[in-house]
Length: 306
Image 1 (cartoon, helix red, strand yellow):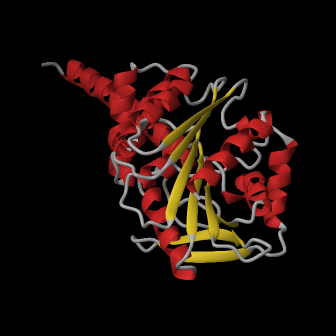
Image 2: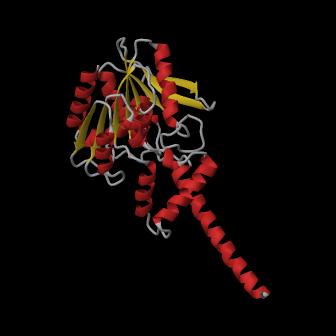
């Protein structure tokens, strides 16, 4: 083989390797590296007002605990005005922090619930350098559950998550939970992370690799750099073994997470369950698009299980 051909093949290999590395690095950064877009979900003034509500609440307390892998986790805790054994853990979505759930906290406080708003790992004031999409976060939420029970042995706990927080909620219900956890509300969850990655990738402008190859690259780089397998993030398998009564909510105009995923999650769930589709609502917009229907459904569900 001539030196010219050898250098040509080496050049092609180097270019291909460099291209794959650059692509994988790009995929990792946009999908798994925590980066908050403050205001990204502020599609309604009520969301912005909710952020201020949490930030400036006179009774808000900063709470820190240690996860099982020793990273430091943060949450804001806002007690109800009157003594209560009812608690809600509000779990935020991707690219945000706990303040985005202020609109929900305001309602729950009016209903006499103590509110715990965790920052998922990698967001807000919680430590962590990757997005786990609920896989590790489910164990963190269990630590927060035990923190509440240690605080109040009579605690009756509701989990309420939005988007990635909804997936985290469902993954948590797939674990063996204490009897203090009375119910869960999942607003706009994906059924599996692999399916969600595929759908999101297809929507990227200029996505040049076939989807199966892009998924394989994504799976490999996330496993190598973050230490988990995206194929293990399966809320639909978690609900199959859940014993926690669950309300599944989704907007029928959601262009980010397919509303059909909610239907599949509901059908797969083995627990007591309810289903609510908010008409005309895009991704996690139900609470502002149709707040009357949203809260009637949530409050009715909670009243039944408590």
